[in-house]
Length: 601
Ligand SMILES: *Cc1c(COP(=O)(O)O)cnc(C)c1O
Image 1 (tube, rainbow, N blue to C red):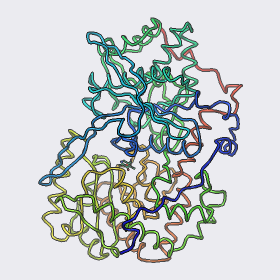
Image 2 (image 1 turned 90 degrees about the horizontal axis):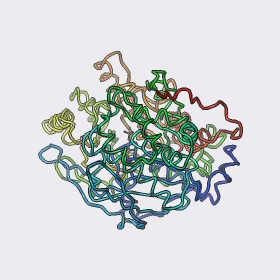
Image 3 (image 1 turned 120 degrees about the horizontal axis):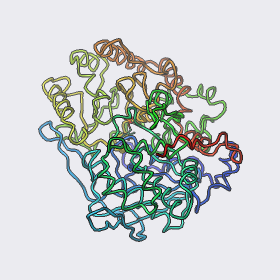
C-alpha cells in the first residue's frame, strides 16, 4: 500500500504573504495600507459561512464563498472581520430505505477555539430581551465575530418570511453591530453578503442618526461605505415582511426617530422586501457572475432598474486544490505567490503534460478513496472507486434547477456510457428540508438505480454531502457534470474546484461558466429539455474519450485553465472587491450620491 493512503502529508502552501502592502501595490491600491487596519477592517456580514474546520457548517455555495473570501483575506494579510451566527445545531442527511432523513448535531463555539466576549441584547415588542453571546476567533489578519443563543435555531430555520427568520436577521444585524462596538472595531467598509444581512446597514444608520447626524447625510454616508452583494436572480423570490412584523421585531431596536419614520415609509401596502432597503442603503452593488449581474432584474422603489457590477465568485485555491497540483501550478509559474495567475500563465500552461495530469489524478483518486472509506452510499455501505475506472460526478444541492435527475432520464444511455468506458458515477447532494418535490425525485432516482444491476454496481449516491466530500470529488474524479437550467445559477463554485483539479467539465452555458463565451468546456445545449438530455449523453461519451487520450486530455485541460484560471482565483476575486470598494480617486468621488432617489413623503 502507498503510505500516502494512510499518513497525512504536509499540506503544500503558497509562500506566506507577510504584509498586505505588497498585494495592495500590485493591485494599484497602495493607499489601502492607511485605509484598512485591525481596528478599521473590511467587515463581511453573512448569515451563512461554511467552514467546518472552525465549527460552522453552512448549507451551500453562499457559505462556501464566505469562508473562501475570509481564507483568501487571511492569506493576503488583509484586515478582515466576518460577522456571522454560530449555529449550535447543524443539519445532516442520512438515507434510510432510499429516502432522505435529516438529523441534527449540537456544536459549541468553545469546542472550536472561540473566545467568549460578552452578551448583547436584542429587543422585540411583547417579549423579554434576547441575550446574544458574542464569541470571537482570530485567524491571522482576520477574525470571526459570532453571535449565538440557545433559541437562535438552525440555518434557514422556518419560513423565509416568518417571524423567526426576521428575528435571526435582526439579531445578526443589530447584535453583530453591538458586538463590533464592544470590541472597538470600526468598519472601513461593510460588505452585505446577500439581503439577509441588511440590518447591519440599518444599525449603522441608526447609530449615526442617534449621534446627531442628519438623516440624509447619514444615508449618504452609509451608502458610500456599504457594498451589497446579491446572489438572487428574481427580486420577487426574496421574502417579504408585513409591517406588523417590523413593528414587533425591528422598531424596538432603533434609537433614532428619524430612522424609524424613514423605515416605515418604505412599506407599500404594509409590505416590504428587505432587498429594497439594501438597494437604498448601498451605492456599490454587485452580482456574482457576468451573466447574473446582467440579468438580475431588481427595481428600486421608483421602479428604476438597479445596476449591478459583476464580480464573479472565486475559490480559495489552497483549500480546494490537491496540494501537489497547486505546487505544480506554482513551480511552473502559472500561479504566483498571491494565488493570482501570472502574466504569462497561458504560455506556462504548455508545461503541463498528460503525464503530469495522470500522475496528479492518480494521487487525487487515492485521496478520494481515503475519504470514501468514512462515507456511506445509499445502502449504508462504504465504497471504493477502482483506480483504473473513469469517474463522473454530480455533487451539488439536490435542487430542482440544478437538475440532478437529468443523467437518469434515459437509463439505457447511461448504462451504455458506464459499461463502454468502464466508468462509475457518483451522485451526492442533500434535498433542502421541506422540498417535497425533490425528496420524491431523489427517491425515484435511487429506486431506478436499485432496479438496474449495471447502475446498482456503478452509480453511487454518497450521503451527507459536505465540504470534505466536495473537495475529495473535485480532486479524485475525472469528469464533472454541471447542468443548471440556463439563467438560474448565479455563479456556482463547484465547477471551479473541478477545473482547478484538472477535471473535464460538462456544463450548460450558465453562471460563472458563462463569463467566457463560448464557454470553454463541453457544452450541454438544446432547444428543449429532450435535446439537452441527448446533448448531455453525447458529451459524457466525448468526455470519457478525452480522458482516455493523452493529446486530447492535455489540450482540453489547458484550454479550460487558460480561460478559467483568472476567474477561479480567489485572490483575483479579492482584488476585484478591493478595487471596486476603494476606487482610485478616493478624494474625488465620481459622482454625487443620488440623495434625490430617496423619496421622503
Ligand atoms: C463548493 C460547494 C458548494 C457550492 O456548489 P455550487 O452548487 O457550485 O454552488 C456547495 N456545497 C458544498 C459542500 C461545496 O463544497
